[in-house]
Image (cartoon, rainbow, N blue to C red; front, side):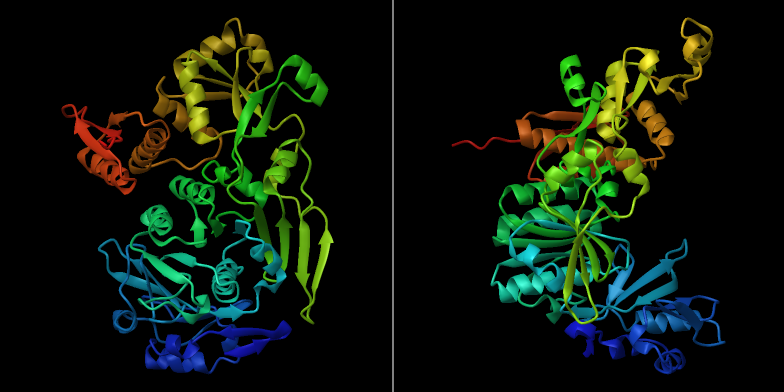
Length: 507
């Protein structure tokens, strides 16, 4: 353990990490002058071993890494999970593997894990208020480090019942005994990353926590679980993918964490009163998190209080003015107010009257187009008139008819061409056009199952899914089981499909 400026204390258990390395490489690491700043050691088969620091990297040996070197390390760490991560028991170090196509490890990233005590004084008042708080920031900036100390402070200083949902043992370290950095908080391990949402719900139902701490909320199911937890009155402390609140609002998977967005068509009178176009974006629900904190640097944060109000203003085109907090070298906290640095997303959200783009559907089912836009959470709305449109969505067979027929006056509009008049083809076209990543068959099947589960839980009505292969049906059944719902397969191949339903208990 060592002291840092501002009375911060750092525990890194560096000897344990160096101890798993081959002797020649370990000796080279110990000779480094900036050893306390070491970030990670890289071992790639057939290459020189490297040590990486915040501002440089260096080779540790002229000898190339061999299979024997990699096996030496893997024999001294815990078991690798399905996410190709392992650890060293009772430390925060993370060892991540790279495998060849036969499954053999051909590379290792040995990342130093450090517990830093004294980092949350800058936001302690926010945490103590009992508000659900979301931390954002680029990878490696220290979000997980702050989560650990928040868990410790809430459990030890405020005597609250805290449960840490620990995926890949990232927060509380490897092994069954959690690292002292989380204090008296309890830790629930997650067997597989895709089950993180289920463990979140289990934590609430089985262990009566007052606070749940979760790292890297990244899927729709995890966002849905987070909302469920918040609605039950449990304080939620978490992190999510994205650097800023702007990023989060425009993320179709995670925007529900701050209330979600929807396109609303105003009456002529209301549009004139607001001095906007008739179609605008509005927040559709209360936010899951009361406070969002953007980590600009480890000791420089932007705090957005009353997130619902902030999101409403941003959707109107007004840039946010968060509270900027900076820890100075003497440990004192300086506070100031002002807009954060502009981002690409801010330019889109913050442009008054242009937040929603309009699409004219030509030769396609309007209902299917609207459902696809809704499922993808895109800032689009279908218009009946091409003169109001920003895009035209059509089939390849109809593209020439549009540009040469009665609509030729609007042939300058960008054409979005779907390969077929089906929901799947329309979604694929919109994903490509909006620069979104395409979903795999498994992702599509699981997303459909998640939507069905939400419907069944909300309305207690059975839902029948699309026909899928036996493998994908099995995944859908497993997902339904995690939410204590019943499911069965009906129909004959190749049209066999899953039904999900709620069995009402007899009194």
